[in-house]
Length: 317
Image 1 (tube, one colour):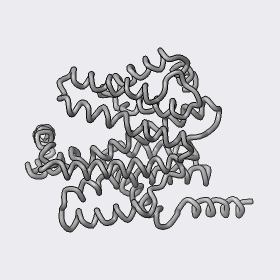
Image 2 (cartoon, one colour):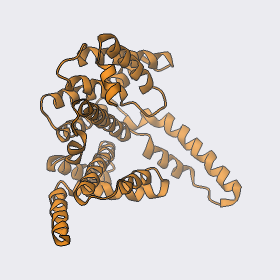
Image 3 (tube, rainbow, N blue to C red):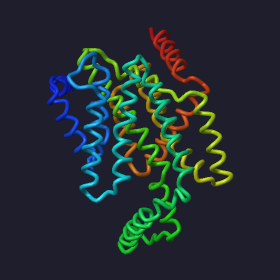
Image 4 (cartoon, rainbow, N blue to C red):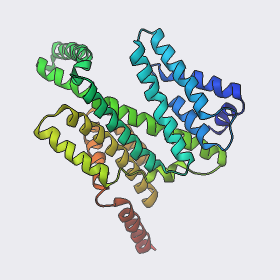
């Protein structure tokens, strides 16, 4: 990582080449949409660079938009996606460069994602309708999969309404907002890690372990969750999905803080991340992390964990 970061930021040509190549990788189905944003965060954190993060961001956004247009995306979707990939990490990098914490960047990114949902629901007459063709396509794919399982002898065949509900839970504005937040935080984290490697300092670990949404955002999350359950308001439903993802990130920060406090083996942390991708276990692990992340805003758990760990070490001594 250190050598790659040094190579990318060594000259103007390499920075611009990196912006182009990383943007190309970001729009491929490799789940690395955070790559160009991480470069921008790194450029913002460095004291001096051959190219400013703003210029590199412009090149990265133009590259991403051009690539999306070349594969058939419309002009407006291409510009919106390119802006979503580049602008939030760029602003997060500027915030970090001015002395802000990763936790503060997390809070601002969450607010920006909520603001995006507000704009979407104010501008569009039927926000869920935008995703209806994708929902129907995904529901059809799920139906074909269920048919194959039924023919194989499982005897289970869900209803069409259940399939559409399952598809709607995956394809919606709330998930888009969550992905925007996730992309921003991962880009900020990777950029901060790369900068720490250059400085030979551990910057990311302590910063990530302190991530917290705060009581204000937790209160907003509680309100929109109640509204989504009682009124079935589309904006509240999308917002509650966003906040669930935000508290999941805070729960992961708590998990890392627990490992640092108690000295757990890295294997336990790796196992928790693996379970996040196991279909059945993921539901329970994600829910537990999100609940712990939410509660941490009201009952600060990290100081309690540190005190408990210190007490345990003192008793062992």
